Length: 328
Length: 280
Image 1 (cartoon, chains in turn yellow, blue):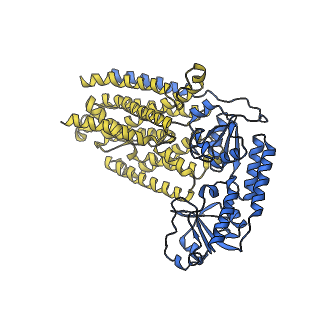
Image 2: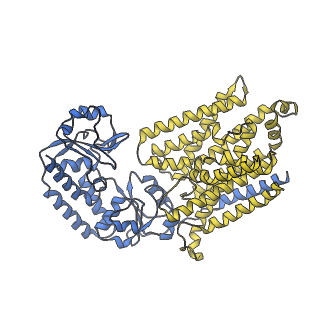
Image 3: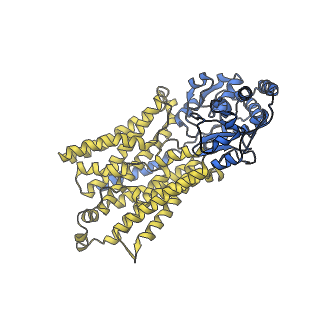
């Protein structure tokens, strides 16, 4: 009953938020006519799609990794690629590579970010592979280690660069779906990223049966015909690529990939056939709501806040409410 | 399984729409010779120059940091120095956007790519650069004569300042990390005009991180702190510095005036000169 209600509420909430986000903008009252609204439409639509894409992908990856690694504390950033992407973005911002190459920020940051993410992916892959086999423990530990090295490197870069780029970097790394100026090449880059991410999410979703088995009992999984090695590598690589893409475009929005899957499990139960698609919807809803919150704040106060701040402040109370209702 | 397939379909629709959105170009055909009537300034110093030129009626938007003169803060805010609210910019539809390099070089590239007309003003390296920037901004606004008058009056104030006997000065602009300015900053030139020679003038960069030992070994005769909340508290080893012994440590000089390479800088230098004269 609760699950059925969820399948009605989540899409409705998403559609409602899309509608509200289309109408709400930085300058209320100035876009009442169609003529005034038209130039804003593409900006608002881009922002909405970015929020849906980032929130959905992060939540799906979080759910898949939590299932695979049987660990409730896992989030998409534990496999290290996000900090690789962070290093790439930091290099391009702080050392001015994007500026020097004459690239626009969308293209430059996502290019360097994704390169960094791939670098981290290969590093984690090589480190976790011991005598030709992957254990899930070595995967987590290598990811965490590479993640720490990455944040260390970012600190070093900040220490060397020390200028106004620092502030921009904080926003980039903590999540920002606004301020993307798009012309044809940027749109193409975002489109390619979007398509790859969506395909990756579908791929992960089709692994629901194996994930169900492996998340309950890994010993039984082998005897039930699940190739745990193959599944581990597959989920790890897809997740790493997806996280790399998201972080390159919108930064490492915290909290979505950790808490959304748990919240979804409270409502829909533990089956991955439901958890993964529902996580996409719930992640999109959370990020869209948070971005809407940012927009409303920016109408009244001349401040720019990173998205992560709002996802946490909006998401934690909702999560705690559900957790307490479920456990009592 | 059904649900998965349905969602898969909606994923695809979503991704397809990602393709189709956003390519709408905001490119406008602009005659570069046209005098701009709707101006947005994204740098406090440039905003101050527009006001000093009495062309503020053309100013339709400023950055969140543009707070002088106080009326400037009443203008529409379009963002901080490096991230801009796109929607406000499009609604305001400016003829030109004033920016400063190198801080805003990336932003300038993005705005140019989005079809906006921009004017870049490099961060001046000396007082001549400040004057040149004022004149160049006046020319951009099509008020060459007003710019000339403003620069002439500022030059007059500058030449009336009496240079004191020469002293060495340490200019601290941040304490964590310890930072000062080199010869690449207009501050080095500004202080030189009043007889204060920057002990780090041999460093060619604008802003630079230094170690406390370097400050000690160069033993400045005057110390100025140019950041909010600075307090000339005792620091290890400082008690033997000539500046400290002679009580020539200043932590309440006019900050914005000195940090922004705008029209208020010259009067601020005169003020610093008299403060330090009186202290001696």
